[in-house]
Image 1: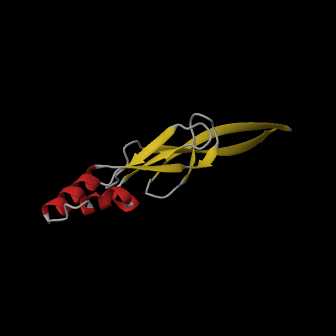
Image 2: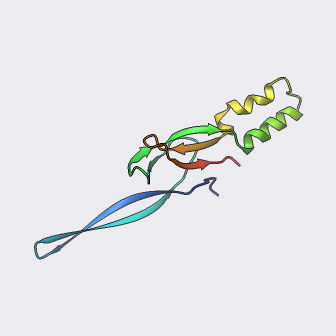
Image 3: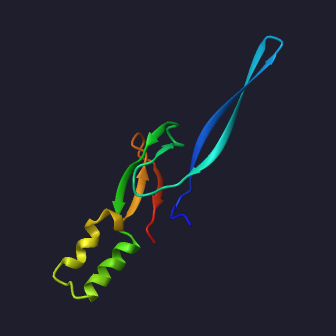
Amino acid sequence: MSNVLFPLIEIVSVFITQSVSSLVVLSLFYALTVTPLGDSPVQIFCPKCHQTVLTKVDYTPGLLTYLFCGGLFFCGFVLGCCLIPFCVDRLRNAKHTCPTCNTVLGVYKRL
């Protein structure tokens, strides 16, 4: 089961050449593949600026972050230690953006 909020589509172009009595015809087909997201940058095709880029990842608190914070609070870590999950990237959601045009390409949610 994938934790991707927006399914990302990578466009791969395939060229087929046909030779018709010394006339070369190029046909362009698009094969769509879904690229899985994670918490690390991925290489993907940006549909807005039409470039293949390595995504920029920004981490934001999500449901898992708040659940860990609440769990630590109820275990007795009330002197600020319950805020540690907000500093751990592995417990936060990852938002993938294009570094060229700053378009949000997808969000990887922990829960």
